Length: 194
Image (cartoon, rainbow, N blue to C red):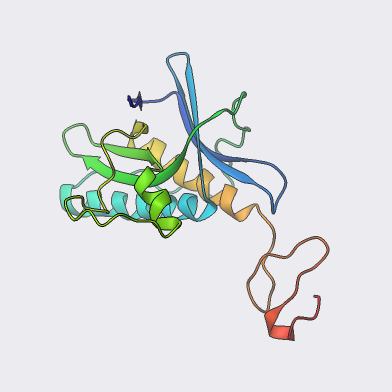
């Protein structure tokens, strides 16, 4: 089976966004450029970790290679708050995210790799016993979204990703689980509604 590599080096726009109401949101990474629009679905925790790891990658690039980083935007700066471009058609669901820093071009490379059959099999408890393959290495025949960003664009992506993640349901002050509009069964109150 053939695979596609959707490369944007650099994109006109690269953002994390959601579709749906809080509690039922679907998270997407979306890249636009050269007349193309690619949207890939992923989990909220993946968006949160991507923002965190990108921040660490920028700090490490500055420490090791002396890369000049832009300052974090002020709280008054809103950045890109526009909704995802339409149509939001899911190309694939992200299973693996990869990050790298290209020293020669001083850019950050983000690669989102589709969920593979081995990941689905492991999730269902049907993993095969092939010891030739490293389960941590994604297959080369999986679809990919590859984006190359400047440090400034990376910082803007991080800020928007954090806003998108934090825009969901507020957490319960006792247990930290998200509150539904009708309340929730709080384990700290022995299952009574809050």
